[in-house]
Length: 368
Ligand SMILES: *Cc1c(COP(=O)(O)O)cnc(C)c1O
Image (cartoon, rainbow, N blue to C red):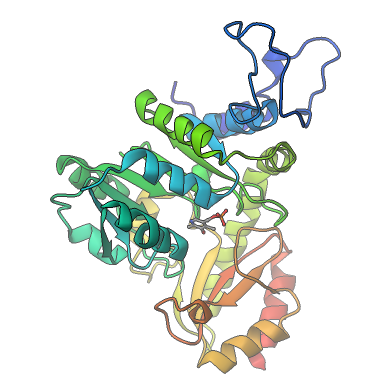
């Protein structure tokens, strides 16, 4: 069944209803049990806390509706990414990953997959649009890339990668299943950090892998059960609650980001604004075609490291933190992590503050 994005959100909000009995809690309980009553092994139900837990399964049910695909939950975005890679790659395989994508994915590939015999090829996100992926077993993409916000045409890349015989894995963290649908565009697996906008309150780490091929997803599930990278029930409870307001928060965050990006682009102290929703942005056309909104992340450059640090320190409505997608606006100077961006490059994650109050605080901090 292919239903509208709005219908999926509504279905997610009521996903428990059909199974509820008189007197059951409407909200999924936190099931803090490592073991389950098991007089008969084959009789169904929960078996053991590493195999399954009703609290994570409630979140997986929500995400499966949003992704329109089988979904397996993990205790962090990186646990999900590791599961997708380890469940898919074999010795001798070639993995193509973005050289400008999420840093830890690159370090994981170099530090742990390469020593096991996987050839790791780093490719700038911009070069994905012109690569034929010959010889690749897995093409891993991230769009918009983090932190540069370059956008690749997922359908075109997936078609070329699949023609070359590769499995396509897409990190959809920056967009969430509400704003971008890599599986509909030809990706085999989606990985994502629900630590960001889906949970949305900076109080929990979580991740998931989603896919529509049962055998591939069975490998991912087996990886979780055997490697033991399982989410906690308390964390799952928080993610379940966060997901209920995801659409509402994204609407505000994306609308505010659009307005703030336009004003930053017109500000004399600001250069190099990257936001896929600006008509002048090199990603505008592709973003428009494959994203339901332009997101809530903005990249921009101030004169130098000192100007960027000063701006972030002075603005009372920007949390100085890494990560993004929270209720509060946050920002950081990415070069402090060694990302290949200019010293004054700031990645801003727009939150849910009333936008004029937020902009007034930013404008004052930009004025110095
Ligand atoms: C944060 C992030 C991750 C990792 O998520 P964790 O929950 O921190 O492990 C992976 N990919 C992208 C694009 C991210 O932003």
